Every structure is written in C-alpha cells, then in structure tokens.
Image 1 (cartoon, helix red, strand yellow):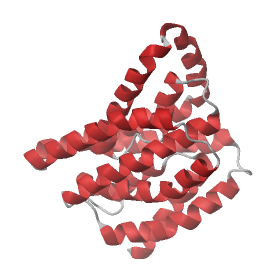
Image 2 (cartoon, helix red, strand yellow):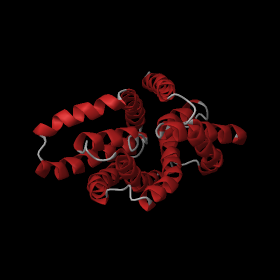
Image 3 (tube, one colour):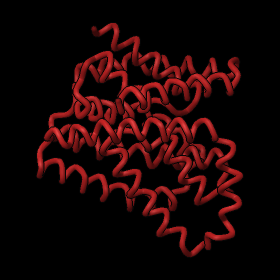
Image 4 (cartoon, rainbow, N blue to C red):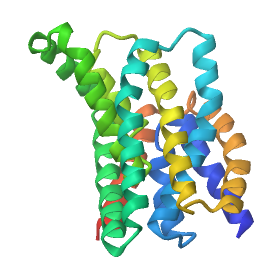
Length: 255
C-alpha cells in the first residue's frame, strides 16, 4: 500500500504542477475511495499534504515579490478565526454521524465549486471587471475578510477551497491584480490557513501520518515533472480532464 500511496502522491503532484490547482480537490476523494479513510481523517491528512506541498511555492513567490501582503493579511483575518471556531465546535461536539454527513456534503460541494471555477477561469475575470462599478474601494477590506471567513469554514470542513476557489474570490475583489501576484497571494494565504486547520484536525486525531509521508515522497518529483509537462500539453485539455475528474469525484462523494 505504501507504493500505491507514493504513486498517488506522484499523480496528484503532477496535476498540481501542470494546472496549479487540483491537489486537495483530488487528494481527499482519493484518500476516501482508494485508501478507505473515513472523511474526517481524509480531510485532516489532505490539509497537511496541501500545507507542506505549498510551502516551497509560497517561499518562491515571496522571493519574486508576487505576494500582496495586505490582501493576504485581510484574508487571514477572516479565515483563521473561522477555522479556529469550526475546530472548536468539532472539539466541543465530537465527530458524530451528523458531523460525518456534514463533512462529506461539504467535500462534494467544494469539489463541484472547484470544477466550476476551473472550467470558467477566463470568464470570471470579465465578470469581475464588470462588478467593479458596484464595488467601491472602501468596502473591499471588509469583503476580503468575509471572503477569508468563507474559505476558513470551507477548508475546515472539506480541506478544499484555499486554491482555485480562493483565487477566484480574490479575482472578484481585485480583478486588476496581476496574475502572478494573484497566484502568489492565494498561495501565501493558503499555507497558514491549511496549517492551522491541519493542526486542528491533528488535535482531533484526524491525520494518518505514515500515509502522509508516503504521499509526500511521490508528490515532490510529481510537481516538478508536471511543471515540465505543462509546456507541452494544451491548457484546455489539461483543465478539461481536471474538471471531469472533479465533477465525477464530487457527485460520487455526495451520493
């Protein structure tokens, strides 16, 4: 099973390298369907996988000046308290059948939302630019904190949302932000958010550490190879296949 985990980590890492998204979105369903983890443990394990695989990307973006610290700080002002509140609620109530159902439903919804954000990536930018006439600058800080809170709840419940969904929310609020700074800011926000959520789930015993280590062994070379392949494969083909995978996984999880 260790080799299956390494190969799985490699495959997900390659997709992340090719598209920049899809890590958590594909890893959690994989942990549930292939490795037969219960949803809570799958989510906790994936949070650590996401945090550790994104650290190097975050450092690289910081070195190149691709992080808007003001936007990242506002997002964290909403996402960290929301995450702590959700983890505290889980501690207080325990993981009952009701929580298990909520986690599974949240996972399925997050997968479908991610598929939509990936499929219509270009269209979101045009929509965001049109929305700016009704979105005055003085309201953006509060809306950014609110967006962070939404991501905090979503990530805590499903481990998904800090990537493609987070980037789309930033795009809606700041459509004139350069693409490289949007990606860098999204990753810079995702690392502390997934770490805090991961620590919270670990405190609940929701992390399979040996499996996580095997997944990481495969993901590191997978991300590098995926980054090389992205130059040779049509973007539409890669994103199309990713969307089909996300929708299939989302519908399977919900049902």
